[in-house]
Length: 183
Image 1: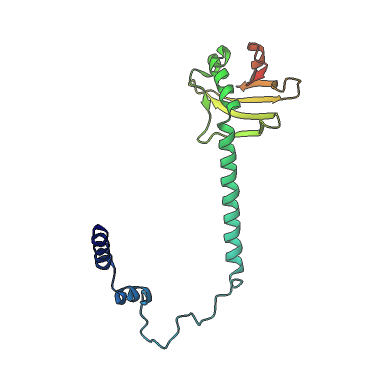
Image 2 (image 1 turned 90 degrees about the vertical axis):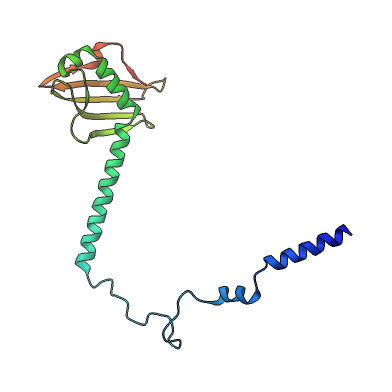
């Protein structure tokens, strides 16, 4: 008896929740738009524009796009260099160096509106040959040069040259301590 009652209730619920067939078919076959002239086909019957008609304009647009892409890539790759652990480590040692603080001041940072690191900074291949401009709180500007490679048996960076040039005075930062390896 309970089985019959359950099946009767389930049938009545499915019938009440079901959409009418007429309504279901109407939603499937009715287009979202209606043409004024039902005999006219919906397609474009006109000549396509000639892509070679404006050669000078197309070439100028392509040149501007190419220059923009190259500039964006250069900025992205330079940003990767400025955020490198080698640059961060270099700034750490520059800020702790007494000779550098005496010459530049306390707040040592990149010089200019947009920092730019010149040269090769390839940590995977073990080649570092970079230079970049810095300034301190005294307003003095300087150029840092760092040359290092991994041509040793321990495969750690060995610094060949690390200098700071400011006001025609060059300071060898390797002489300040036993900083022979980056890392």
